[in-house]
Length: 308
Image (cartoon, rainbow, N blue to C red; front, side, top):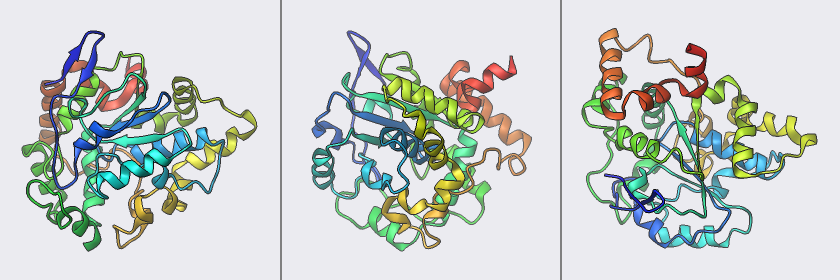
């Protein structure tokens, strides 16, 4: 359970370990006053927001190696000692990502946190693409390197509907809980150093959402470079130049980096999940998250405004 202290700052109450996670890295991370932490459940638009922040910080540079600049800090490979040395050596404004729930994260008032949401049905369809295209290098890194806690991750079933059922019944299996991730971040949404954005809102009006992120992070915008900054953050540009923004240039997927940046669309589940499946998911979302958070997860801020 998420614990808050004094000024409602969350405190870390547990560690998470798995084939992916080593949350203990945050215990040794030395925060700087201008650090940026990008928080999400996986496949919610993390890479997209990393690209947006990088391009705004550096004024529109098509050659930025964003994946190298912005590591997934709590991924347990490479070893945390190596990763900490790398981020400590960075001299630019740091922007790292996490997929942890807040109660497994060291939360600092020095940092600014950008959290990205997405409907879990879209998340799972994107996860399936990610998982089903992973190669032996990916499985070796997650399963066979020292430090793994718990069972290995196995190849997914051939049927995405079976994958969906396993994910629903197994609370995020074979990854981690979507509900606790969204629930713990939602609990701190009103803190002054937390900013919520949504994948669907980025799709609706990316330039406006980008300006909102820039204002929150106090990134000055060079208006003479704005059109280039926006171009380099477009889905089409990122897919065409995927090796710059995908970890290890896409080495974990035989089809290359562009399979990681897949379709970037929502609703691919609509013609595959039955009405009963979707109703079950929507009921579960309200039970797990509460009606307000469930509505935001479903369609973001702009989607709710449009439906009023």
